[in-house]
Amino acid sequence: MSVTVRAPAKINVYLGVGKVRDDGFHPLETVYQAVSLYDDVTVTDADEWSVTTLADGVHVDSGAIPDDDTNIAIVAGKALVAHHRIDRCAEIEIRKSIPVAGGMAGGSADAAATLVALDRLWNLNTSDDDLLAIGAELGSDVPFALVGGTATGTGRGEVVTPVEDNGTWWWVVVFNDEGLSTPSVYGAYDLLEGGDHDYRIKPAMLDALREGGHSDSLGVFIYNDLEDAAFHLRPDLERTAEAVLECGATMTVLSGSGPTMLGIATDADDARTIASRLAARGYERTAVVHGPVAGAHVVAYS
Ligand SMILES: C[C@](O)(CO)[C@H](O)COP(=O)(O)OP(=O)(O)OC[C@H]1O[C@@H](n2ccc(N)nc2=O)[C@H](O)[C@@H]1O
Ligand SMILES: Nc1ncnc2c1ncn2[C@@H]1O[C@H](COP(=O)(O)OP(=O)(O)OP(=O)(O)O)[C@@H](O)[C@H]1O
Image (cartoon, rainbow, N blue to C red; front, side, top):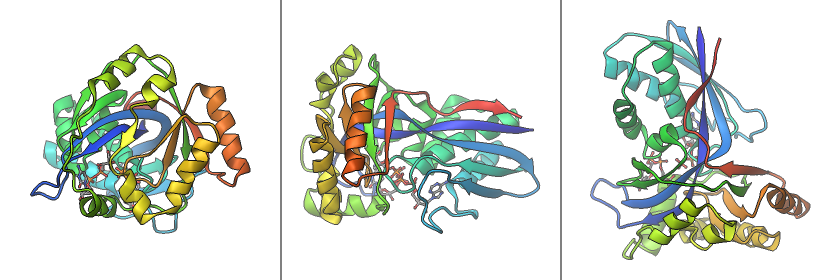
């Protein structure tokens, strides 16, 4: 039998970053939103661990996604097996739509999907708390990929608390052919800014999500502390941000640690118009997505 689980990409509608901690991580106050761009992970019982990635429609540099035990999906599978003290292996197939090293937590989505898929395949009945704890060990963004929806992230991002979001928010996502390493962006942030400021989420932003009104009511609050650091490392991203605004988005923001850029749109039609204007200016790799959507969930048993 095989189980397929779908896990969403995330955006950080707000990302506030504090001073680096002794363990090398940064304290965060973030508002995550799961958006309608997904990786599907299929697991099948096997004699040894293996992983393959099908990347239709996604630009993947050769060698960008490891096909050995360092792939985060296998790391996740082994962590679940260790947690339950069982001796099992699986063949993992990842059908990728989330850009690699794009700041949309694609690897984290694959890890979350693998945990849920193997839990169902082997009837492990892992509690939600245990799944979240195993996920947090794998990466700061993994717990949110399990939870989905809209949620705040605190600690190093792994403490996830769902928030009420009554909107359907439309985003234009502008991909970039060249990935950006998360540690390098945090490193540049330490040098340029350092985190010595009030980085807390503004309560009025949570009100805007709860009210779920016009995109401008949320747009005024979207913000990312890592944006200047990413622009410093990659000046072309600042030009992309300008283009997104010129093509009609009311606000633009870097997605996570980049290089993906986001523009907020008023509705689906507006988002498609912005995307087609961007295409006319040479920004052809875009997607129109909406959020919030569900976290990692089973889509097929076969
Ligand atoms: C940029 C974000 O996507 C925003 O949600 C996340 O902070 C990154 O989350 P992630 O990719 O799951 O990150 P992890 O795999 O946990 O950590 C990768 C590296 O990013 C840096 N890192 C990550 C999270 C955090 N709160 N502070 C950090 O400084 C550290 O250098 C760490 O070694
Ligand atoms: N299943 C996987 N999918 C993508 N990348 C993986 C995977 N497993 C390991 N990796 C490695 O992890 C690196 C970061 O990948 P990922 O796509 O998760 O970055 P990201 O979207 O920028 O993450 P985040 O937004 O959480 O910082 C890649 O460059 C790749 O070498």
